[in-house]
Length: 392
Image (cartoon, rainbow, N blue to C red; front, top):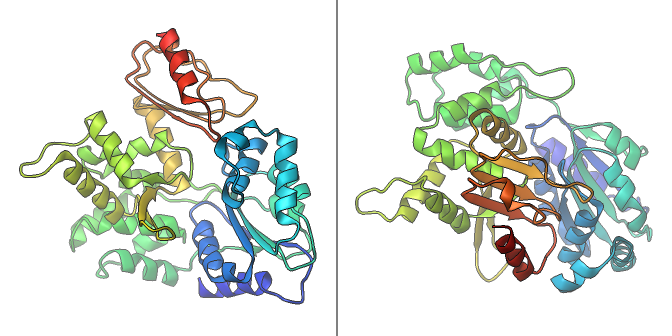
C-alpha cells in the first residue's frame, strides 16, 4: 500500500495547487479504502490547520452530516446544535472553514448527492485545502472534481494474495485458497483468521478450499461466501455476539466495555469457573479479533486511552442478512423524512437508527425484550422515557 499512500500524499501536499481540490479513492468493498485513507490522514494532518473525518455510509441525512462536522470542529453545546436549522448549520460550517487550511475526509460515500449537500459550504480560500473521498462508485469523484485524477484500488495479484494470506495463517498450503479470494484483501484477511484456528492440518485446509466458491460480480459488489464461511465456522457461543454488531449503525465504533455489558445483559456469555462474566466476554471479543472479524480501535488522543471496536461494512452486511434469515434482531436506519417501517409483533430485539428513531410505537411490538436506538443528534431523554411509558 506504500505506492498508493505516496500517490495520495503527493496530491494532498502539493504546494503548487492552491485551489481547493478533491482526491478520491475508488474501489469495491473490502479493498482497503478506509484503511488507506486513515493511513494517509495520519501522515498528512499536521500540515493542515483543521482536519475532519465524516463517516457517510448508506444511511445519512443532510442534518446529520452537518451536525457531525460541527460537533468535531466547534465548541457549540449539543443542545445548541440540536436547535440549529439546516440553514444555520450550513452557514456555521462555512464560517468555521473560511479562514482555515482544512483537510476533510468523507468516508464511504454511496452517492454524489452527498457532495451536492456539502460542497457549497466548503470555501475555497486558495490556501491548499483538500477533500479526500472514499467510495465504491466512480460517478462520485466525477461529480466532485473531474480535474483531479482518482486512485482506483486494484485487486491483489496471486503472489500478493498469497503473501497477505500467509501473514494471517500457516504457510504450508498451496495457493489455491488465495486464488479463490479473487485478490480481495478483506476476504484474504478474514479467511486467514479462520484458517489460523484450524492448525497446520493440510486436510482441514483442503476442506476449506473445496468449500469456497468466490467470484467478483461485474457491478463491483462481491458475494459474501467467504465471509459467510467464516461466520458459519464460529463456535455457537460467538455467533450471537457477532450478530449483535448488526444492531449498530454501519461503521459505528462501540466502546468495548459497553459492548461487553450488552452481551452479558443479553445472556450470550456462559459462566466459567473462576471468571466473571465480563472476563469471559473479553475472551469472546479477543477470539473474534483473532479471527479478523472484529477490529479493535484505540484512541490515545485524550488523557484516558479509549478502546472501542467495529466491523467492516461488508461484514455488517453479512450480519444484517443473517438476522433476516434467523430472526435474531431487526435493525432499521431511518432518514429524516421517514418513519419506522411496519414491524412484526413477534420482534424481540429491535435497533433503530436516525434522528427520528425515538418516534416509535411500542404497542406494535408486545414481545420486545431489547430496544437499542442510536440518534445522530441529542434529544431530551426525559421526554423520550415519558413517551415510552405512556405507550406501554
